[in-house]
Amino acid sequence: MHNAEKAGDAARWGELVEGLHGRLEELVELFVTRVQEIPEYADNRVSLPELRSTARETFRRLIDGLRDERFRHSNSHGSQDSLARFSSELGAKRARAGISPEALISAVRLDFSILWADLLKISDAEDAVLLTSHVDQVWRVVDEFATQTHSSYSSERVRMAQEESNIRREFIARLFSKSELSADTISQAAGALATDPEARFSIVAASGEAASKLRTIATQGGWLQPSQRLYVHEFGGSTYVFWALPRAHGGGPRVAGLGGAGRQDEGPAYIPAPIIGIPCGYVEGFSGLRALPSAARTAERLALLLQPADRGPLTAAAAWARLAKQQLQDAGLDLWADLESALSECRDGERERLTETVRHFLHTGNITTTAQELFCHRNTILNRLNRFQELTGIDLAVPAQAARLVVAWA
Image (cartoon, rainbow, N blue to C red; front, side):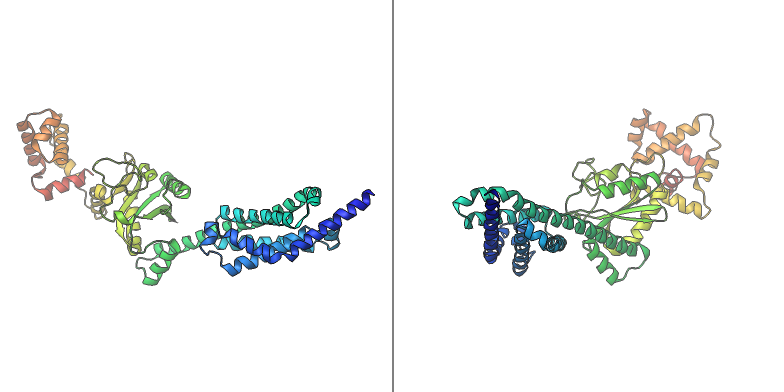
């Protein structure tokens, strides 16, 4: 009697499963209607014909998986392998279509609810115990399908990210490899980087420990706004990081924390906050990708001028005197040595007083302010400046001569 009951249950379950097969098109239409309630499916990232075709194949394979265990095993593992292959292809297709993992999971969950609801619809009241005994089977079949689909989806997303990263690196390398960029190169690179080729950009360059910090910041990027991206390039021991400036902030970039306040004289925040504390060469607000090679060379040159006391990005505006001094030294001109020779005639302590006074004056440009800062009488400051001119021949009231001194002391 017990075996007869089990045989009867199996037969009845087979009838219900066949009933699902007979209602395949109804299941498909219900799925299409409900999946379009998910925003990413509603905006046609997946076409309606594709949704119907996929739903039809999904339900057909899932229903085959609900057949009696003995029937499925007698059919070998063909249906299971078919479902696995189909779910793998589906996961990869949805990743390429730009469907989010949350939307994918929501869509797959519909399969169980639709199948189970339809089973309840076509069953009789006396089938309640039979359905209860098979709910685990229904869930297991759908769950295996969902797991395989999500696994394939995740693998495809990783592959796509690696491919996108490789493409970006290739085009970034092209931008840095030539001093003159063709219109085609700029256009193709802008497309790969998903940026406006005519936007304003900023770039930093560093080597050694600072370069390592730049790479870490660019890789993590968790503090960035969704529309922002840091682009990285490695070459010749230097690390370069560049980024597009927000369109609304096209003029007069300043060094300040992104999303945070800098000093009051810094203006809007255009440099990513974590970079502020890294010593590096910094070129701000150059126009378009075409200017990138030149800006990169300047940033690299500024990085070479960094001094131990520097605690953040060094701009050309801040380092022009150092740059000029280096250029003059490369040409065989040493303003520092000439100045040292001229001041060698100073009496005891006189040199320190003169250089202190002149440095303060170069910083303020004002006799009264210099006197206040050094707690001296105004006439004392004038006497010291006159004495300095007597020794060196440099008249600080003449900008061209004062600039020589700024360069010498850079």
